[in-house]
Length: 291
Figure 1 (cartoon, one colour):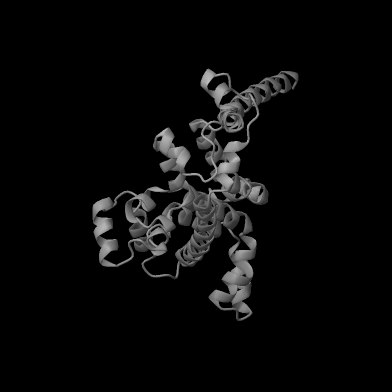
Figure 2: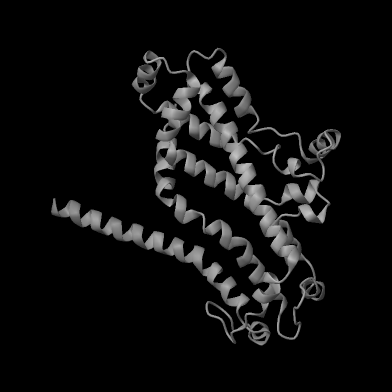
């Protein structure tokens, strides 16, 4: 028993070291970006900024927060993310729940059809032609409908629902409850962990994705925050600074603006995690049960 305890102690220490190293690898770049956003142009030019600001300077944040296009992109992206997440969750639930029922004819065939789409895609050009024919180019619809269902998330939810005790539904049926009544009054309240997890997956996906905006949107009013950030990182220093009203080129370097914009685009979605953290691990663990 002493050997076992000693062995477990060493193993725990090893895991702690590995996890600690992973945390450092993850957090150090983030701290560096924060430091760059708050440092003076001279310190950035010298390369003396690492994890702590050198020559404290908040002009970059002032420029970002006073730029109306960035503020609008933030508001628009929040609205788009919420709208997309709600619709995606409704569709995922309404698809996953029937596929758990053995009485559904062709259940395995339908499941195969959906899984098939995970491995094959038409490509960007056919998608563009399709969206153009549907007249949804340069609309919010083109950013919502095409990615509205994640088959991966649907499979996770389906596996979770199949792990719930069948006796619960059988009792409800005996009491005369319909399928919709069982779903909304029994199944969904019991599925809060996995639903919160999938909401987080969908929200993070929509928040971080900018390729579809780049391909299918040319109206600058429909640019998401991540696309604005991508454009900002890829443009030249001179044009970068002229984008922001009130920006003083003598007090703001290119890296200041880039770093401040990255923090500006990252913090909102990071703030969502604490609210869903208590559901996240439970949802992923229970949703990983195989059929």
